[in-house]
Length: 383
Image 1 (cartoon, helix red, strand yellow):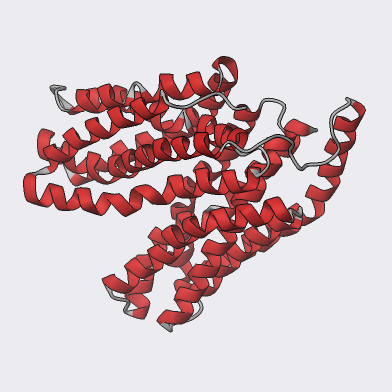
Image 2 (cartoon, one colour):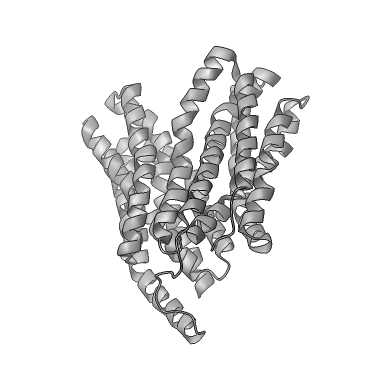
């Protein structure tokens, strides 16, 4: 039952991430039908990603104080309804409010869901890995659904995401309390505490060091997505269309590495998984600078995917372990800021690329990978 519960929450993760995953594919339609400017489009992306990720730790702290099962259903419903409404209105600020509602819904769901997965999973890193793949799949299929729906019905096609969100929220609202009650009963019978509130202490110093590592990892992740295709176009002369296959390969391998990394973490331990993963980052980026053809980039991307995605479960569970009294807050920080911090610093690398060339950015990524690896060796075992 505990394993099935994790899969259910992962399905909820898939559904809640459909909306933010679909937004980039919907923006061109909003520009076409509503005449939005590029500045307004950037504002919507800010409302969706950076704004929601930054407030996510606050919802994590709230979850620690008053965690209810229906928080997950509320987050899914808000995410779907927010995007669903965005295509039904034409005023920019109404669209902005709808997208903000979507982002807030996502922020409500993630820390609460990660907190529940931490409690219900016997193997915590594997559980977080399975949970995370739901989000990966949601982001992967969302653009396809959005393109089909809006091509068929125009911007009102966003309503489909509202319907999916409400349906999944209803399922979670009905199933989660029942399944959580069963899990609690099973754990009480086995002699474990009945409460979902974790016991332990908070190690803020260790959590601060982990946050620095997450910063370097986040910058590396967003920079690879932004600059790797451009670097391959510049260095190997490939077409823009062909460069898109690099990102597809990286995202698909990332979903596999997230699950495999969770299993790997449970085998070797949290600290060792971080060290072994991040120590590969700088060498992998360095190899991109010297390989003779673009075909060598694909096996290197498998290593990059492991070092970026295979360590995801490790640092999420490690953060939860450092803040044992505030698992929701730890989840909000590790999951939220890992997605947003890189987006804040990536424009600076773009300025470097404009001034000195894309190759210089790749050298900087090697340095960032080295700093991430060095930072992992300052991580300590949880108290």
